[in-house]
Image (cartoon, rainbow, N blue to C red):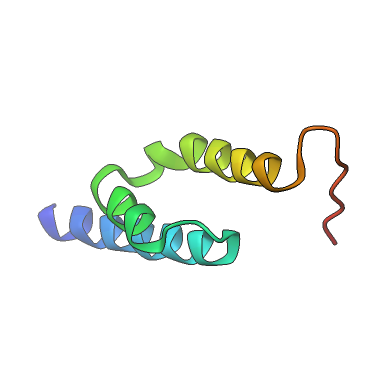
Length: 66
């Protein structure tokens, strides 16, 4: 049981590291958060990513993603 939990935690750590790398957020911070909390930080990650885009381009700017 402990082995399964540790493997799942490691997978979420790698997942959030890669997502933070592609989004331009702090890689180590999100990797540790993924290791500790797992999928529970997904809404917080999406909100942080949205806040960063709004900070860079403003609220009235339209951003197209292909």
